[in-house]
Length: 92
Image (spheres, rainbow, N blue to C red):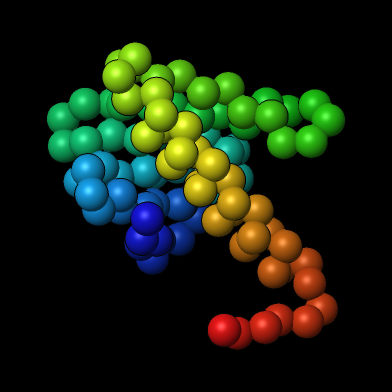
């Protein structure tokens, strides 16, 4: 997963599949698509304990890779939020 530089939007390339994740950072709404097809949509649920997402995957055979991408996306976005609130930043 490679993050593309964008303003106010999240955009990631998923290289093995030539898929793209694009989304609205403020509303937590993301779409995974290939060149012509919407593969998965992700919307963050509000007013819940912890982070809860509504995930729609359009093809049953793609459930495992889509869920893996969702987990990585959540980790990347959560780590970014944690770094913004952290007083110490470590560069590896």
